[in-house]
Image (cartoon, rainbow, N blue to C red; front, side, top):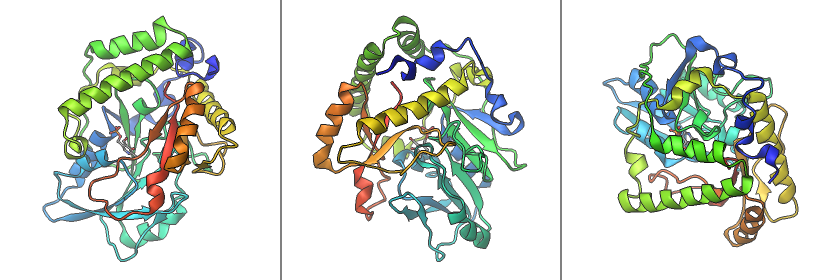
Length: 339
Ligand SMILES: Cc1ncc(COP(=O)(O)O)c(C=O)c1O
């Protein structure tokens, strides 16, 4: 892997061109949370009523998100998406809250939602968990286009946790206090990744060891749908105080993610996969390289990528309520940029 695009490179370059997160997002309507699930829970709790309300969410979604809705007074309806991940909304389903997901950092075209939103007069939430720094075709930052938005910053940058809620309403959503707390695991991880080894190959090995250890830990201690049932109980901001200043070089990060996308596209050009998105427009800052692949062809793709220090992730683990689904939901994979 080219050293320039490896995951640590933008941090190593942090001394130049530093930007604050509030140079990007408007400080007055941004709040910090540990995870987007907590941000979503707080939005839904604010709008929770005694009377049962409806929430309309895509069926192509990770099961974790259900934990944000579970203990509140909402009935969940699912809408399917087509192969381009555009929504298939039913005018027969009435809702109070609509969730719009920008998959993998690629913007949803809001024109597909307009008629539905206008006729339902619902509250709108933009799930931009994957799309930190990404913008739509008009240059609008994803997460800022509807009533509320959230962005899991930790999914793109290697910080322990951290999500932002972008509140475009005048509603006073509950905000957690920031606590600066030392976390040994996070400290070691950061030390290993960024300070000791400026080597993509070594980072790749460490990534695999951490992945393996996490797998053992999860199989031993958790029921399989644990994350669907329970919100993360960690609401303390460890190093997230960093988010206030975020001493990172964002233009490097934008470059890194776009270059990584093009590199993987080149590696897989002749292979039997179909990229989910036909092209990368100039405003999209992808979170990963998403593609469709049949199960029987995966091994070969895995080998090509592994040789180049890249890893494939299967996405998503669907909510347990989704029984009927289009077959392509089972063929979605992405190459992570987080190494
Ligand atoms: C589309 C989408 N939204 C939200 C989430 C939850 O994000 P977080 O881990 O920050 O709670 C996920 C989880 O991976 C996701 O894939």
